[in-house]
Image (cartoon, rainbow, N blue to C red; front, side):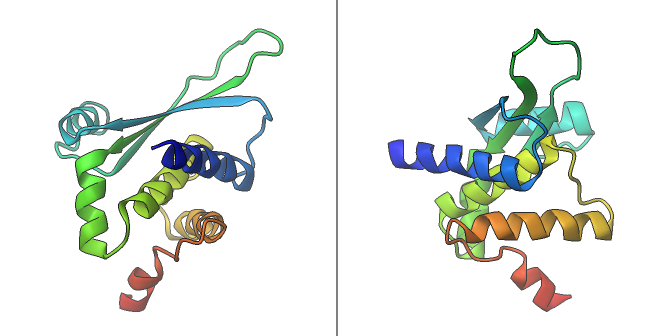
Length: 146
């Protein structure tokens, strides 16, 4: 686990850098939770009564003491969903986890994928960050189908 923990931290840092993090002193939390917890959060905060692979909850902007880090928010990963999706997509759980961390951190920075242009911009950053970890473009199969 120490090696995976280091990769998780490196992925979050790379996403912050690539996504244009406005502060060198930022903090975020990454949670690995069970599907039941993620389902409850997804239902309560997004109105979708099912688990999802990753949820991001940006922290509220507000005053902070001088020199205090910027609190970006929380990224919550659904463990069972990640394992299931990785198997279905023929990729390692670790690589899929890294992708979802990058994706979740970009959401904390304000990126979204609701509109096609926003999705292309966010996905391009994800692909670039993942390439730095030796992880293949997760969107390539989707683009081939379209």
